[in-house]
Image 1 (cartoon, rainbow, N blue to C red):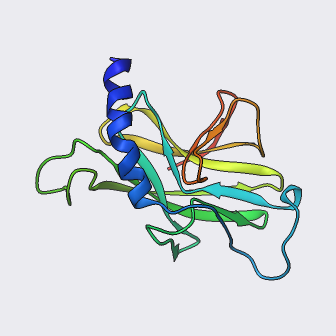
Image 2: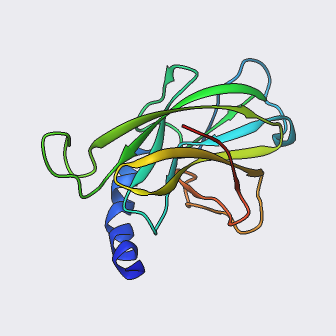
Length: 164
């Protein structure tokens, strides 16, 4: 079964590259600050044990471009994010195309300085009942970020701090 999802991951990877851009965007006013004074929100995550892809589409009601940055540096504080769940095998009237949007979730959480936040699927089901936001210190051991910083695999030590 893991092999199936791994093969699916190889197919999904080009889709993620099409949906996301590269790099990190500053989402606050003023001068550039050091990473330890900021929070970073990654737009997309992919979990090989689940068939879906999750992508942050709005931060505090501000729409993010599909081909925009892969991560956003924000000031610490409270954030409302809208997360889209994609099922690459979605077929039928609810699908826009393979990889079409299937469900939207809203998550409210407090971002802390020096931490990175990544959307994550909680549980099973298609679509899952909940999506969460994971938290871990910047550059935590065991995390993986794609070459162009467009999606992230949190480490096994990342904790869910808020769910939809």
